[in-house]
Length: 165
Image 1 (cartoon, rainbow, N blue to C red):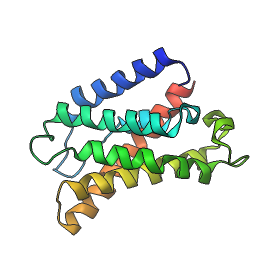
Image 2: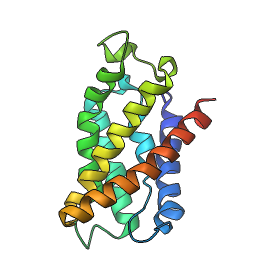
Image 3: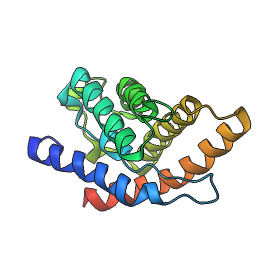
Image 4: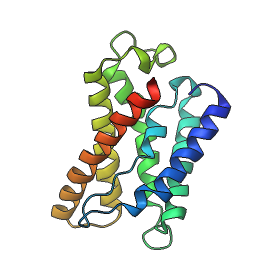
């Protein structure tokens, strides 16, 4: 996502898909996939850390507004996305096999195993923080994190390879 028009379209596309479709999907009060983090995970690193932090927080805040969580428990999506955006360069450095320079990094050259590790670790971090900030008890926190992360990871991998083509 180097082009600004593509970036804006993906931003609002992920936001709308999350609000209209995936926020309605709640299975047994445990599983709710959060597909919108796909946008945060695959912004090109050349955009810069400050931009990524601002766009991550903006995405989370819009999800909070669309989900009515802002008035109930505060900006839990915004905080989770902000922290995910902050740690994102570290996760990219872990999966990067060629260089530590993030400007030369491309997701097109990464193997399935590395993409899986990246998506899984970022998704688990995001979900853990999200459910932690929402005030769940520890057992409910772990169950919600594991189940929601599992389905989010499946959807993110599927979406990544569909959009990659």
